[in-house]
Length: 498
Ligand code: NAP
Ligand code: MG
Image (spheres, rainbow, N blue to C red):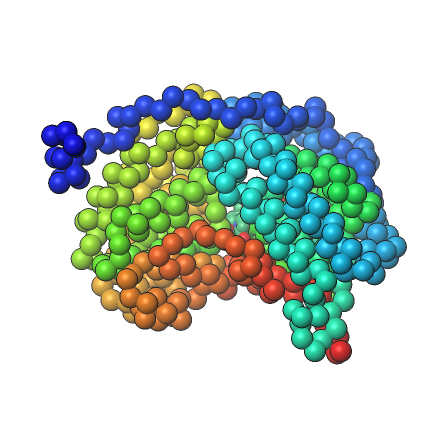
């Protein structure tokens, strides 16, 4: 060990910041995926021209460059897709032998794995997320969801003992832009496993991986009309929600739109599940392994640029370790590499859209105006594209907008607490209830906290960990219904007495 290294090992505070190290660019090959110039709507197993005649351009948010022309589905298009789904439901899919349904799901899962590099590149191009995340998280988890629900397709009787499950019918599914292919998988896999057919609308800004997925469906020879993909903006979603031929709506997105959908559906008898926003508390006790906790804090809020509904956006630190945690956190933040999503070294990619960047900027400004202390590490941003430097706010009061509202960006608000009871009270002081994190060495404390926290998911000594077998969903304004696990089948079955 050189003298310098010994010095660093003894006094980590003297360690050179990792920003002193320069990584050579390591770009993923972009040409592995073929992006068409224009796309139609995927209805009845083929791409068709939109009757609306309308199209829009979808872009690469890191370069502000157009990628493709995409159809804006109108009322007639949505109607055509719902009819195709209804026909496919009636003409075989709903009474296909469950083990046969499973084969299709297994095929889709395997094809996603085989084509994972293509999907990863496309997801990063169209959404701005780092290739490391698309490659290691989004795409493998999407495939895992299809594998998992393939396993349930012929075992539904065991999922619901003493009941006779049958499919609901046509599911209308609306997804957001933060995990485009993964949210598609969360929606489509359980619906198909239970024998339903689907009309899915991807988010306006990230339609491309759903359109590439149509090619996987063709390769898998899924019967025409079982899955239909209609692209477009919120108007397309609204048409799908109000269409009479849809039996169930599954929505993931903002609380505002979720409430509007619930109002539209009130009294119609249509089934509804909502996965909405969050403002999770990530709670660090003084006995926690602090270096691991700091990794968990960083993963909790800077993963996917903070475009994560379950992001640990409120950090609750026990008062006695406050200074230490903040110092460690700031040092770690200085090592985050922000930039080209296709570079394998990138930790934080581009903000998904101009609109989202404006929303983040406005909320950050409100934090400064209300009196919070802002810290951003030195960071050189690319000239073009939508970017936001990883940010932490200290000196935050619970009443500040940055402590109350979902920012959906790489912005952390820090609060402190003294006792476990105070931590629970502060953590629950939000209209949301999607997730929470607890960092402590004591198992009994983890259990007591999990009991007190009003959150659908509570992670202990980890954060943002997902598994297809584990149900996910919210309390309060974070929505209702669960996705993942056996619970994720429930919204897609009608249970009759056996
Ligand atoms: P959003 O505007 O609510 O959009 C979600 C989806 O709904 C998009 O496909 C959107 O189309 C569509 N939509 C918009 N208006 C609609 C309407 N009136 N009727 C039917 N559909 C409509 O939310 P976002 O801006 O995409 O995503 C950010 C929000 O989603 C955040 O608040 C976040 O917390 C939440 N989210 C929650 C979860 C969860 O699991 N709980 C997961 C991810 C995101 P456009 O794309 O054209 O707007
Ligand atoms: Mg929107």
